[in-house]
Length: 416
Image (cartoon, rainbow, N blue to C red):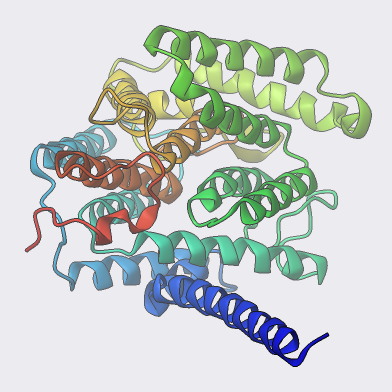
């Protein structure tokens, strides 16, 4: 080989190395630059869903209060415009719940409603602060998703709650909570995945952790969300409604007729208890008036223990009656799942948030309190924020189809 050819080959090799290093540096810069440390750490801390010994207080409530305080100290990036009405309505709904709770006679087993109303106010503010840009979306999702990874190792090390027959709980404290969290944030993790490899790894991780939680509903919710993300752009409104109904029918058949087969063959006892709780919940709902019984009433006493309703829809109805239930359903369906601003195909980000909404709707069916948790309000805030940003991007001629969470750094919308 001539010296000229050898020199040329060496130069080409060096250029390839520089190109690879450049791509790696850009990748690290883009990912590191897209994270705000404070937001990341605060949302990571939300993983601690177990009570502090001696004072019966959940650490995540303290963290939530800090997140809200930090958010309120910042200036909003966006003017929500007409979407402020959503939070005005929610504010009025909270006052309504307070009135119902105050004037209704409480059952002897009812939970203390004062802490519950505090949590409702906090998570409402969280949704608002996410919507108007005062909380960094990528940092929030990345922080909590990292927390779910740490939680797996904590559980394997025997840390946190371990009393659910060996299923994954850890710092999340309850297997239904764990199932809901790994389903919802398994979907939201797709927002921060930057390439196909990360998407595949995220999906494998989510299915693995959902299997470890032993939650059949969560596995169904996550699968329904992924299918929605894949096929929703090809469906009109009516076909989407049919798809939603098919999800209900298929999951009902699977959980009723095949719930105790294969790896779940040892669930006869727990399923019998769940059936008793559901029956008692429906009985309580049948004696609930139009306006509900008030906060803290979505529970039933069985075998000298108090059990939270497994069906979040029935729980919402018992606590706040038809006005509260219909409001939560309307927000879940028409804001989280259906909100967008053009007749073009929804963006990747929009589809993922829609998928998270589908997962929330499925989890609400059998996993206890899901509606109006902080996870629900986070997805609501994301839906409003992304819809606003994409509306402005479309008006500026920016293609949003493949846009990610960094789209809002490329446009100017209602900056204050």
